[in-house]
Length: 111
Image (tube, rainbow, N blue to C red; front, side):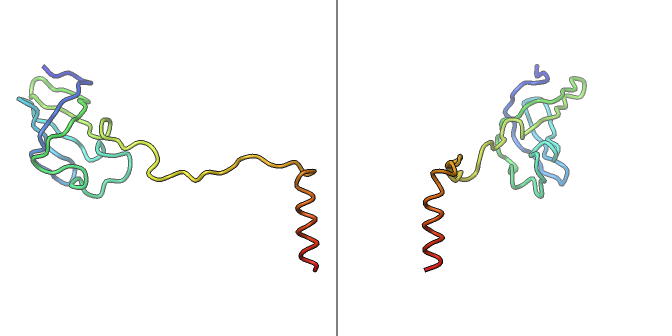
């Protein structure tokens, strides 16, 4: 018996504009388009394909009809930074230490 909060493996059986249908054993489920990503989802095909096995989280179960409401994004979220963070030196030099270099630069400009 499947219950809310379970992690299940399901097979994508159909994709429509509003979501993807999934078969999980004797249960049928739906991953609504809003459960694929926190960002805008243009095409569900960008996330899953018909016939694909996916790991999903159960949001709700209706035992009478054997229907599941499922989430893809809770288990398949890409976290973190997608690039390298530039390295910066944070801090400052005191004015006393920076002044000689500043004065030398100003003198060079005048020459």
